[in-house]
Each structure stands twice: as C-alpha cells, then as structure tokens.
Image 1: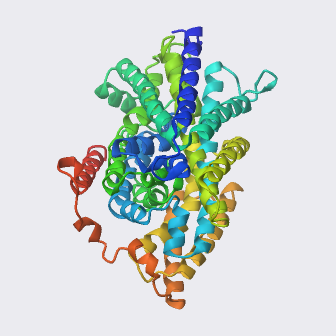
Image 2: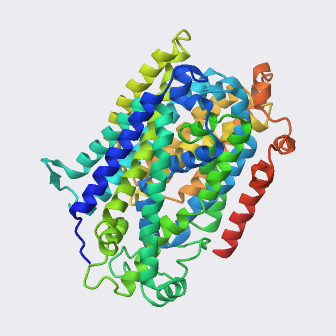
Image 3: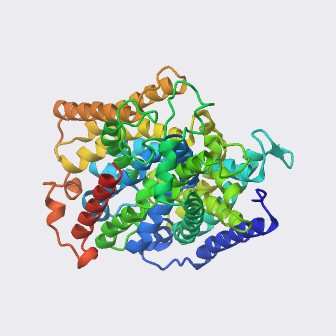
Length: 564
C-alpha cells in the first residue's frame, strides 16, 4: 500500500474547501432583512425557521469534530470501546432536553441561554453564564477542533512534531488556515451559513468515517475474527507503554468496566459523572442549544434533539471502533513491516496505510469538515452571546444591523483567540481527556443552577448567583490541582462531587435568602415534573415526541445490554 498522499487526494481537499466556503458565502448573500425576526434574528437564529431534521443534524454536526475522529480512535486503541460511553450516554440527556428544557426555551423566546437565566433569576447569573459560554465556545469547542485537525493534517503530510512548513511551525500554520477559512464564511453567512455547511460537512464526515471503518472491518475479517484476535494476542503497547498500566485486550469490546480498569472509567464513574457533563453540554450550552432556539415551533424544538440522539448511536461504530480494529490489525501484522502507531497517531496511521489514493483525500476532507463545522458553530454562538448579552443589554436601542456588525467583528476576534488557545490541549495525555476534564470543571455549577431553576420554583436568584460563583471557584481549584499534577483522580467522580456540592450550596442559600418567584419567571418553571409529559404531543408515530423519547430510551438501553 502506498502510504503517501497523492495529487488526487489534495485536489479533493482543495475542491472541498472551495465548496464549503462558497456555500457559506452564498448563504450570506441570500439572507434577507424582511424575514421573521428581522436582520438580527435571521443572522443569529436563522429567522426561527429550522425544522427538526435540520436541528438534529446541526446539533450532531456542532458536537462532532475532529476530536471524535482522532481522539476516540486514540482512546479506543488504548482502552477499547469504553470511551464510547460519551456518545451513547448523550442519548439520555438529549431526552431531557426534548422533554423538559426545550419547551421552556421556546416559551421564553430568548436568543441566548444567559438571557433565559436572567429571566429566571437575575442579571448577575446572566453575566456569569455569558463569560463561561464564551470560554466554552472559543476554547472547548473551537480550540480543540483546530488543534486536532491540524495534528492530523500534519501527520498525513508526514511532518514530525516541531517541523516547519513555509518557514512556519506546520501545526500552527494548519491551525491558522482552518481558523481563517471558517471565520470567513461564518462571519458573512451567520447561522444560516453554519446550518447549510454543517449539513454538507456532516454527510462528508460520515462518509469518510464509514469508509475507513468498513475497509478496516473487511481487512480484519469480521466481528468474530476481531473478538478472537483481541482475546488471543497481547496489546501492541504492552512492551513499550508506561508499566503503571497493565495492558490487555480481553474486554476491549465491553462498554461497562470494573473498578481499577486501565481506562479509569469504571461503570459507576460513567453513571454518576456523565449526567453532570451531559446536562450542561446538551441542555445548557449555547453552542449546542442555539439550534433548538432557532426552531420554528415547539414540536420541532422537541423532535430535533431526539433525531440527534438517534444519530449518536453511530459514532461508537464509526469513530471508536476503528481504533479497536487498528489494534487487531497490528496484532495480526496486517501492515507488513510497518512500525505500530503510537496511540495519538492511530487515525492518521489508518488513513495512510488502509486507503488508496483518492480515498485518502476524501477522509482528509472529512477531517477538515469535522473541524470547520464545530468551529463555525462555536463562532456563531460567540457572536450571538456578545451581540445580545454584552451589547444589546447595555444599549437596548441598538438596531438589528448594528448587532449583525458586532457579530461579524466578534467572529474575527473569536477566530484569533481560538487560534491562540488551541495549542493548550497539547498539555494533556490525550485530547479527549483534555476536553472532558475541562468540561468536568466548568459544568457542575451550571448543571445545578439549571436543574433547580426549572424544577424548583423556590430556587432564588441570589442563591443561583452564589452557586455559580462558588462552583466556578471550586472548579478552578480542581483544574489548578490537575494542571500542576498535584492531584489527578477520577475526573468523572470529581464532576459528580462538585455537582453535589453545588446543589447543597444552592439549596442552603435558597433557604437562607428566600425570594418570591418573579411573575415573568413563572412560565419558565415546571410546577410538576410530569407536566411536560402531559401536554399535547403534536403528531403521530415518531412525530409524537413522547413516543420518540420512549423509542430513544429503549434503543440505548438495548445497546448497553448488548455491549455490557
């Protein structure tokens, strides 16, 4: 197999870049000021015209980035399918978004989640969430996507770490090029450009991921051969890895692990810790939820997340499984005399050693698609937050055109900050570890405030603000200890313990400083948790959100029973 990247491959990549940037720019020219919501509403929320298939695809696309293709394969090469829990557990939190959060968001008709928090509590809560949301969009979403895509492209080109290209560090050059191109079409097109390009990029991403999975699966000889090979051969890293880890592949195809597993993800850590991360990420994060805020009505706002949940079934098979297949192929010496890859280079190794000319370019384009779609989603949510939460609230007289200009300027600066921040993820053992650790420090106070805010009408604004501040302080302490290697425990359990602390703080301070529920906040709180389950379902079959939610629940439970 020729492991080099040919002219045809780079032609495919160049055509993709031209197509996606052209599509995003075209969306900018097609925006019309007279649409529902005005120019600002159309730029930031696509005029509230999104239907559930587009919402589901856009949410999936905003979530899936190069980190999924690269780092899930990396972790699977080291530990098996267990990190696929971060994909399948999302199905349960998307049910929560559909049933309990989306109706309240649509009812309030807000453009940002910080705006929702102000209506429910007070302006201080809005300010804190605005800052956290900006950090999340620029660093957690965009920064990690740029870094991972640049890492892979450097590997495909054959450049070693620290290598230069055109007199510049190759990694930083790729980060800058990807960031600038994404910022260009996002600035011109707004959310409509993001949604249009996300739809194209998601298709390309899935095609690339399916191609490399199918080629590897056929080469290994099917599921039975994969399982037998894993069970009967030592792990490729067994002779070179840190001896503090006992490598084995006996339970590589299991999602539920016992305490002491080398992955550090025991079953109870996932069960307790993921909801903390997942509720924030899927139900309370502006970058993800903005697609729901742009829904045409409540029915589409409910069904969109459920469609996204069905899509989340596939990453385990097309993003995680390739790393496991790579282990088995190396065990069988399927690559001839090629040296086994390091874990970080797993996906690059599969691309260059499994695929023929042409398909290498297709998958490389898929890498770019994954990075650019996440970056564009993060940039648009950043522009929305700055325009509405930092400018509109202080100057209510600002018109739609002025807000759009602010949004475009924000996109430029957001791109620059993300480019600067992206190399920080090189500090962690794996990129996937880095992104989830950062979320575990940020998520607990926000999850606590939103949960108690929508389900407990006695929760007060003062207690919510105190919980956000105290929770962020605790999260910073945990981050400091981890960053400086003073304590590196189970970050999922740490997230759960931080959530418990935040719930206790908010409950206690609410009792200490009680407040009457504001009249404008009454529609934003469920009097009874069963209330959203009793409303009109709108539609038949899977168009009935209750039936669709039950179907999602049954499917994911069945998957876990199969891969337990």
